[in-house]
Structures are given as structure tokens and as C-alpha cells.
Length: 246
Image (cartoon, rainbow, N blue to C red; front, side, top):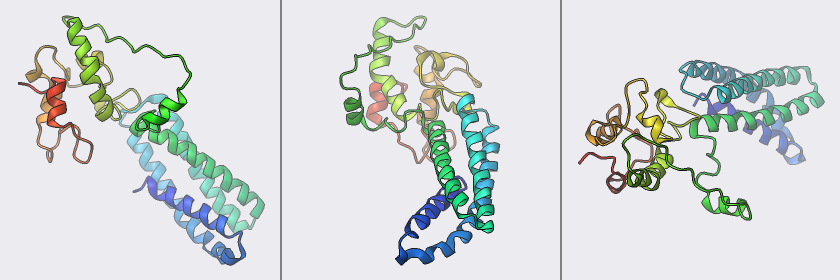
């Protein structure tokens, strides 16, 4: 709520300013000061909460820094908007509003990339991706990472069956852009490496794999992955992937 409330206020302000250009809606400008008075404390609080959340260290460092400073910039721009409104500097106010909305768009995009992964805009648009990629040379798929003791059949099964499930339902929170809890599930090597609490995947021993255990935790309890409210792996998906212990 704290993150999206100032976004809603700024979008509302932009709509009011746009409609006020028609004589019929000219009186909407009277609400400008009230909206700004609500926006400034809301966005300052949002920036502060974002800064505190960033201290967790589970996000991509460079992208986080861009998002953080862009957010601080938008908060400062909102404060300047309020000052220009009080001073009745309409031309400067209109220019600053345009800059603020552009900054909001960029900041929101980086925030979405942090939370949902850098491909969040195209991940669920396969038809559009095919159109955009039409005529481009086909890039061969990346070979499965070499893992000690894993046969070629096992590697192929991972790339074909397991990796697509993890990409669809896990990597947005546990990938290169947003490794929550220090855990990455975007590659086989990352799962076998010892993260903070030990390896998530034990080759050849599904019962000892933390990844399998997390799938078996009841949905309403802490530690369930994916957590309640997010897309869950179906029993068929778990069975086909070979993640669940037999």
C-alpha cells in the first residue's frame, strides 16, 4: 500500500491536470493542492520504507541502486511540485510535473524488475515475443551446466522438465535480479551450491533436498514455497519434474 499509494496520487494528479484543459472540467484544478498535500508525505514514507527494505540485501545491487536513487528523485520532485504550486509558477509546475511522471515511469519499471524479474513485461506474452523476434537468428539453447555425477539423460531431463517450472514459478523471487533469502533457483549449479542454510538440491536424494521439503510444507504454514497467494506447482508438475520425493 505504501509503495503504490503515491503512484495512484500522481496518476490522479496527471488525470486532473489533463481534464482541466477542457472548460467543462476547469474547476478540477482546485483539487491540485489537496492531491499534492497527500502525495508528498506518502511518497516520502514510501521512499523511506523502500530504503529500509533494501537493507535486507536480497536484491541485485546495481538495479537496486538505480531504483533507490530514482525513487528519491521522484520524492524530491513531488516536494518541488508542491512548492511551485504554492508560488503559482504554472509554467515551471507543468514542466516539473512532466519530469516527475517520466521519473515515476522509470522508477516503477526498475521496481517491477526487482520484484518480478527483468523480463516481467514479456514473460507471459509468448505470441508477442515471437513477433518481435521474427527474422532474428535463432539462438541455440544454453547447455545444461556440468554437474558432478549427473548423466546426460539427467541433465536433459532437468533442462526439459524442471527448469521451465522453476523459471515460471520460482525465479521471479529467486533469480539473478532478486535472490530472496540469498537463494537462487535459476540454474542447477546455484541450487547445488551451499547457500546460507545449505544446498536446496541434493543430487540423487530428493528426500534430503530442501526444495522438495518446502513443497511439502502445508500451504498455510511459514516456509511453504511458493508461498500462499502465488502460483503453486500442481501435483502433476511436481511428479513430472521429479522434485517430489518418492
